[in-house]
Image (tube, rainbow, N blue to C red; front, side):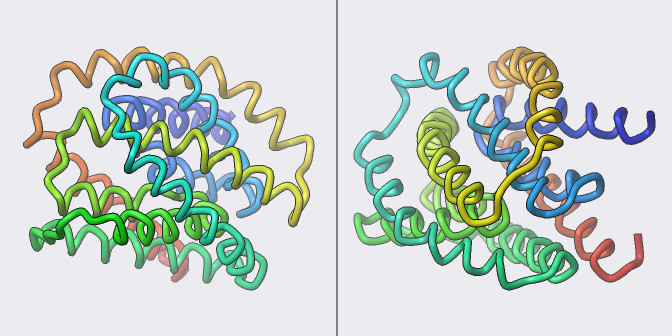
Length: 241
């Protein structure tokens, strides 16, 4: 019962964050799902539910999508996907968690230091490539996009819409790649099925929150989320949690 309650809380909070910020589900869900599932199962569960969220929201937010940037991200990610699956197949669970934790903390440090970059065509492709790599390796396409969009001072509506549209593509490709190279099991799909009602509840709450979320609160909340998740993963991978 304790595991079920934790599972419900993870999915609900992550769904709210994904809807209200555009990136929160994978960053929140994947690290904590590793408490309950094997890495392969946690990643596939995250990919399935993130795909459900993207499909559910895409129509409502399509007017804010930057389609030129979306195309570049998608093409770039195709290059990163195969490298990501190679990384996933070659590392153990402890190293996996440690790597994710360090990645999140480095990302947060760059954001706090007011990292700035100018958006260019080449950089769009590079960011897409890193995002594709991280999706198949750790199930988290968001960090490169979040750092890039924040560094270019992208308006939160465009950030949310473009990332959700991109996720629709990359999660589908990554899920097929994961299943092909690592297989899947009944537990992943059963957990996904039971989580869908929780996801839709989170979507509803997240839509309401988004209307009242200022750019400043959005930024502060981003930092808190990334720091807490990164520290948690580091402590767990070092056996201190």
